[in-house]
Length: 440
Image 1 (tube, rainbow, N blue to C red):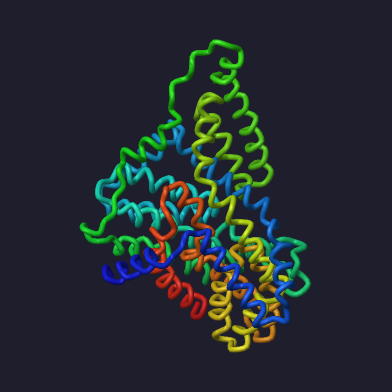
Image 2: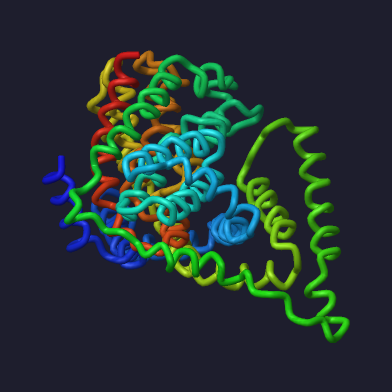
């Protein structure tokens, strides 16, 4: 195992470019594939790219807020103490790896945005408490929990087809979550990953000479940078900036809405609600507007990757969908499928398409017409087909820097630092998911 991990780490360190260069390279790959496999011209592909370039603006802002609000909440004294207390339960590097994986899996299953942030924040706290733990593997383990998100409560595909009026309702009707998220095959896959991934991460621990540790003092300085003493209030403006009452009233307003929301909607978390919760808890826990805003300023420094890269992914999605390239890829896998192998090939095709369309809802819109029609022709369960696509979308996130950007920004690492470990996770989880889709 050690030699295999060292091999993948060397490959990633040597050849994996910065995530921005990665998305630029993907852009030209998709442009070339569109010219080869569709009847689109160069200008057609350029037009599709430009037309789609700004289609993820709302989502990009949501992801920036995932990072900013998560950082702000984590840097508050109350939250730091809570995470620190939980992190203190780990007494060795192996325990730290297992605990962060378990916490991340549970959090991601509840809500993907929550899990993505909490996993990275908890990993940083563990790095401060546990000596000689490999920081790269710690963050990779936190990110590995994200693997289960599409089989959980916030899975966009199963939630879409369970919603009255969804775009494929005329073809498949409304499919309840009892046949997707809570189906035996899906629950079995989730439980198998819940057991296997923490153990796998534990066995990926490098030898002592290859372990990369982070200076705990540096992490302490990062998260305590905003804990400056309140300035002496000399003017009315100063008094407002350092007023606990202003923060308290603002937080009460936000919490009142959250109570209203959960009373009327149950525990239905979505990205906006998670960000809303993090934001107002951050305001409350920092105590004063001045401390809160200082924390926000620090948090925004890590958001540059999200801001500049997400429009490029939107452009890629535009080329994939408008040119028909995503449908061509899906049809290619359908053409070699049988009733038995179709869920596996649906999963595999979704994993490949996910490199270019890293959005569960967007990917389903592209692949659903082809996959659902083929499922009905072959006599395969449409619910299982939808979940096969969902798992494929989640699977290759392990080596797709798009979703790792918030966690990497929180951790202060580069994609190539964790992708060697994530490649092993990709291989093992791919086998587990494939067996679950084929034989359960």
